[in-house]
Length: 126
Image 1: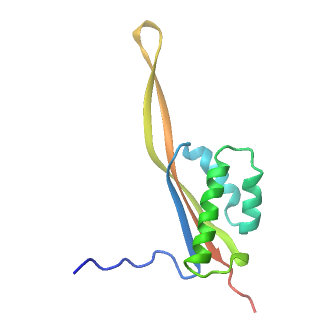
Image 2: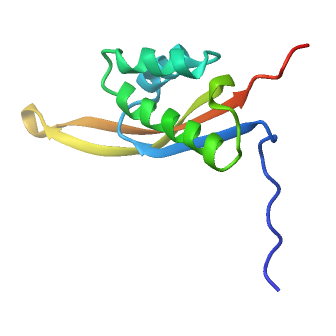
Image 3: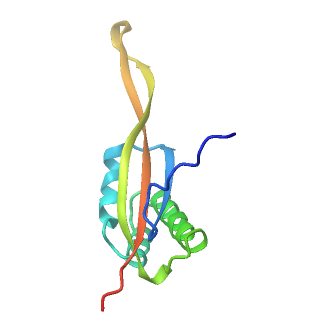
């Protein structure tokens, strides 16, 4: 008498991985995510490996998780995968303050963000 299982939000040739509460601003994360959107998985991994941005390591981890999900859970061919979506969203905002002159405070905002990566298998063309 449990609840019904939810329908799969992705199609049969897609796999997904996500990370929540990533300690970087969405604007900075979106720059890295935009650099891998639409690229083949091997190219995207190579680009993230040699990227100089700090958050590229976390994006690479999520992409590798999506590839592993595609291979192990959905039996997709790893050689034909590409990054279909890489979406970034806002998460919580840590609020801190710093003492300033004359009894005032300076607001410090420390943003967090969410990342969702969807890989899709290329269709065979005849």
